[in-house]
Length: 385
Image (cartoon, rainbow, N blue to C red; front, side):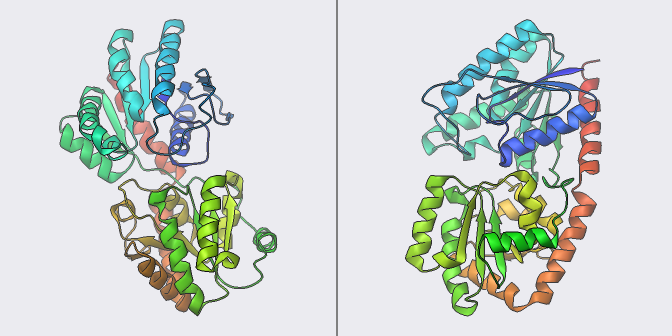
């Protein structure tokens, strides 16, 4: 059975939306489906049996797309539409799967090509756009949810949003599994090698992984590091992720704050290295300051068995509880006091890590994700019979 999937993302890149798309494709091909993916012209190819990637033509002045809203998406999405039309003309499909704003393409084209349309709702799109576009996006999003044949929501709050908009719609919640599941575990040699590479001889390590967009709260984190450094001068912060310009600006801030020698920016690292960095950490950080979208890294953090320090906002509390993480106010002072609490109480940190790991093993795993995917797609396929 062949599926035409439309993903307006750089595929593949090691960040939230592309990683989620990869997980869903991995489940589909494991379940015996064949997936033809229409996506942007940039990103790394991946080797998954049953997956064929069809990229749009490139646009000379667009070299990439940042997370969240970007005006670059408008011309790129037009090319996605044209490439999708080409695929529909050349091949016969019974199932059309769309991610994010590509649902607009799906609800327009699905009736004409005789396809059933499954919409993967990553987030509330109206929250990502400037204020002057929000009302328009709200109307479009309602249409996207109501006109799809079924919806897969990526986290609890977005599922609640979809159900408020369309109470009669088939809405499924399918949470991710840790992206490092299945990768070889880190050894003591791996972590010792990383310590030597980053010139961290002694002291605890507080680690952040993810993008360096403003809503991730890295400015707050660096300000909090000043407070922590006063009590724990040998504590080191390792920041994994980000692009050169973002790193340069954050390094300038760290220099200004006087903590540059205790903050290490790795840039983007291959997915295969993540178990090594998780093992390196004593505390895992998620200082996000706003939003409702659950960071994908939380599932990897939970699986790691390390103590999690996160801000007490909806992005985190849909998954994290006080039993699984230390939740603090989204301020520099809150992050600093949280870090100091865990550094001064290693037994508390160890207990948090153990509970979170047990929780992840029970609720977030590849076998559970695959079984839930099987149930959803069997129901979806039955709509076509």
